[in-house]
Image 1 (cartoon, helix red, strand yellow):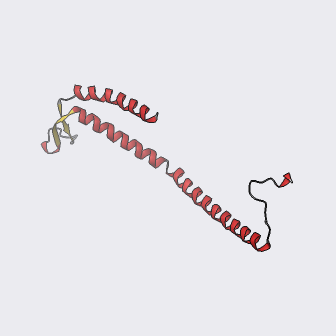
Image 2: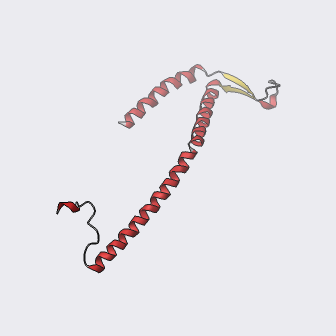
Image 3: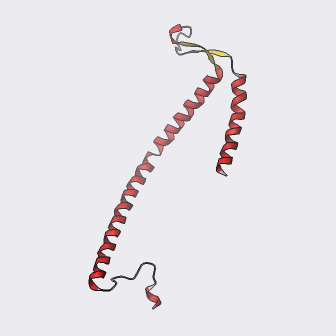
Length: 122
């Protein structure tokens, strides 16, 4: 289902981008010098307009993604801390289970009721 939905979305994007690229095939000059637009050293000539549009969209997506990633940094850091803390508590619980199991084998009986069993049901 998700593959079908993804294909539908990609098809809709292609329906928008293909006419845009066909309609904007003419060449444009890109001047990188705002003070002297006629400077030939900093001018890119005859670039198809749709490449300029696609490049601007791509740069916008990359900058937006980078900004979102940077904004979520504190949440990722907090998740790392919580994960390491949970791992520490899991290790400690495993060690305590091993100690209890070791005691139960040396004394001959269970030291604690089995997990999941109701001790009041007797």
